[in-house]
Image (cartoon, rainbow, N blue to C red; front, top):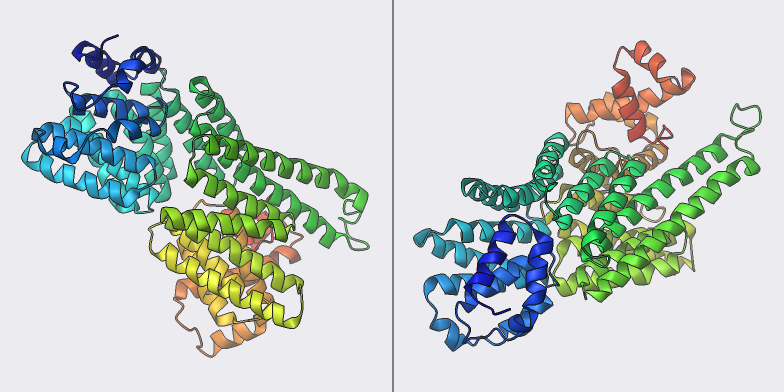
Length: 541
């Protein structure tokens, strides 16, 4: 098939209509011609941009562009007409985005958009904003990302390109979700799905299911999230069983399984604590009664490990460094949960190294949070001599402080909440016992966790608050308040802390009946349940 205008027109039509199978067939049929594309090819810049757009839709990966772009010298570029030059720069920007070179991608796209102000081309402008928004999102710059994504969606809508608009809405929904607007995110996903379900754009359709999984996971519905990720994997696999998005969905599934396993472990621990003579829980807390839960915990943990191994294989196939780094991160957390500290440490170090290589502050911060948790585990278990405990404690402080610094450089509020909790847990460990620092970190994390969120971050925060209360003493706290010693806390914060002291006590006195607590204190059962979850008093599993 000759590489001519007719071919390009067919590909553009397939792109606009999201007729993916047809477009892939055309591309495969002209593969020999694509490989010969060079400076002497008529309309080379347009053809390169078209190929880049199809790579973004799932045709091969960005490596297909590397050899082609290397053929075009700086002298050739200087001779291009302005429109062709801007299209060529768009291709370079996409390649940078695909490789994780986000600053380079943003810089190039800003140059293109600046030029398009004088030479309007709404089609090119929509793609430039779309790719720029995604680059900002990967950097954790969510305000800038949302501005670009909304602009891209408006331009696609103005151009009556409903399929492109639907794809952009998937990105927009994720950004709204990051702002705590879960209902609006769900609505956008449903709207995008209604448009795309008539196409064979399996990557976008899989992205919709994957996004749903992440939304429901944040509400603590891990089993439901797993169902979403399983559907996403099946949809992606219809395009390519080894597509990089399959690996991403496996990674999300593994993360959900890990959190589900932690819930089960918490049930095991709670039943063990409640198994006292004469207790209603004694019979159920017998070791034999706990064994089915232990088996379930081991099974889910092992499934998470298998998901991560499968994800790593796909990421390595695509030489996808960011994905490999996130697999290492999740492996480290999984090993730490299982008490395998020596296996967790090298995974955390690998995640941090990859994050540094990519200048990915989000991955670096998450790796430091993990490393702080590992060092705190050494402190709690008193591994080694006294001098070793001091070394581990100081490393935990160093890592948690760096995690805070990195998180503050993004607009990722949950990352910042996780870093605050890591710093608070370090301050509250057996070595430092810096309770005022721990309280300040807990208060900041509380303000960062949005309404309706009920996942592992809430549980981690509850654990930190429980440690602070147990160590500092309720009487000391109440005495300080009675003397007007409130620090920098607002009245709302003091009220919330008081509720976290009183409500669990009333709950225990009222035979653990939420409805009775609500009636006794004249507050809503919803608030009782929220407070109990915040302090870790309810077995949420």
